[in-house]
Image (cartoon, rainbow over all chains, first blue to last red; front, side):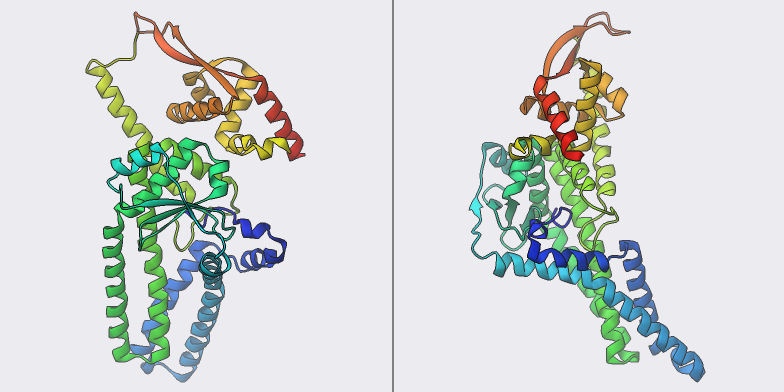
Length: 290
Length: 98
């Protein structure tokens, strides 16, 4: 869930330059992804048809390749800055903000319903570097920023926790997909290494890793949305995502999170599915007439 | 700003809730289905937002029997009405936006 909200560290004047830098480096996610695809495809050329080309064509290709490489590095630096900020802010700069265990009867019931009772723990933190709820996949700990508890009604906080619990229940599937992606990257790099030079296949490896990271993360987010919505109802999560959508400049997704409008669309399908189920039940005798 | 401190503004800032609250303020008491038709928001989402607004004391609701075409008996409908607190919050939000 994190990554979509405005970080509270952006409100700290001395760190405002970080946000300016991010905005300056910003390109749409589609362009960033296309650049990565271009880099992967072009990295295959030097090991295959490149040697048969005329010298002038080789120079042209080299110029194109280096230009795209620099542009990709430039645009991906935003993701790297955000990632580094989150890691450093959470672990080093935010060391004094110790998370507090958080539990309510509703969260306990939800954990039981989703089969994560005793496995997943919920914590609240006032660390300003944490810009949204997130789950630590290693210890199944769910972290909620304290300002979320103040800003959202209980039912929507519960929906958010349901989404995070969804990450815990889908942890094994996520790990399998991540392993498969890693296998694909290693296999591709190995094949490329047989014909190409180290710099080229390393660039291809990193580019393909970033591309597949997006695919695996997006699938994980969609699954967590569905898991949470099936347990808490989709209304709360839709409402939270709609509010977050008003707080961001562009809704085109990120390296780790799909666009909010796509997530909302998928959740809205559940609204109608459940209504159909309710209508069928009503036709069978359980009507609302009084 | 008091309304920011108590979190009510954050609740109202949700675009669908703001739309519903403005509609109720302008049109007076309405059913969930009516609100849904007017705003284009799914009835289940309308119910959710009404629950949240009711928790915050911005909307009052009561269940009533209403005649519906095709039904011999009355159908229970939830009538929603904006409270004076809603007026105050919307006024504050507008002032803040200026």
